[in-house]
Length: 346
Image (cartoon, rainbow, N blue to C red; front, side, top):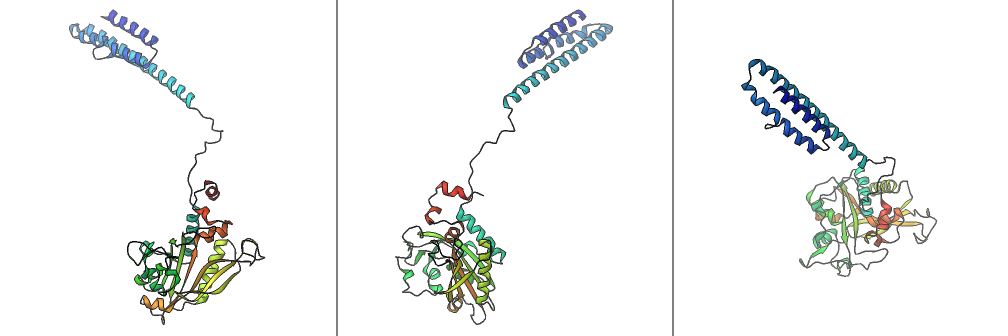
């Protein structure tokens, strides 16, 4: 039996040496070391030997088993390293080469402009009005009536406003000013909010006008608020937005929901006030409308105008973006022209 064990070891060692694949090694392991392998068959016959022979043959069988397991394991490791090196060789990359460009999206210029404006006013103590205070589909009550707009005002005509078929008095809002009423009906002073959103007007589309665009409404109501407070807030906004203090002027104007009302101009950023095509030779660019909240508006929402006062302002996001980035056609914001949009990566 001792000679038989030595023969099995010699044959197994030769087979392991000739093995060329992991599959070959698995077959060899099964043949010699498996439960029904040749070595186990020998071990099963140990019970028929004398105690002395059993000790000698059993020790030799265990020694051979350990040697074969060690040799097979070593060969397995060699195969593994060969496969790993082959894989690494095939997958190696030159880390000095430039990376592969993967196109990716970025924030739309109107979104980034809105975010910038909102951030500036938040830094000045304003908060963003809740979404429910700034719906795009409005009733005339919020869009016109409570803003002191007369029944015969031309803004109510279908030539200016989109009326829906939901009900005779339901419109697509023509201004974000209705957010003032929503907020003041649900919140007592002090109030300091801004309300960004999309608005709709029945306009002929051209380089300066679109039938939908974006506005940001502002409202500040508290005790002892003056026109000086309005000027201070807007001048600070203009300074931060345009990156430097710029001359401004407040021109008399009229809005039904503010009194007094003003159009706010900023010195032309193209010609520094000298006069150019952008500012039509005036040296000034109109950027927003503003004014003190009309006492009738305050009364309508239950706020005593003898105790509280406030100011409101509204600005077009597209106009501010066009001024800041020298864009001469509002339609570029909505045409999905990648050549235009890629200029605002950042």
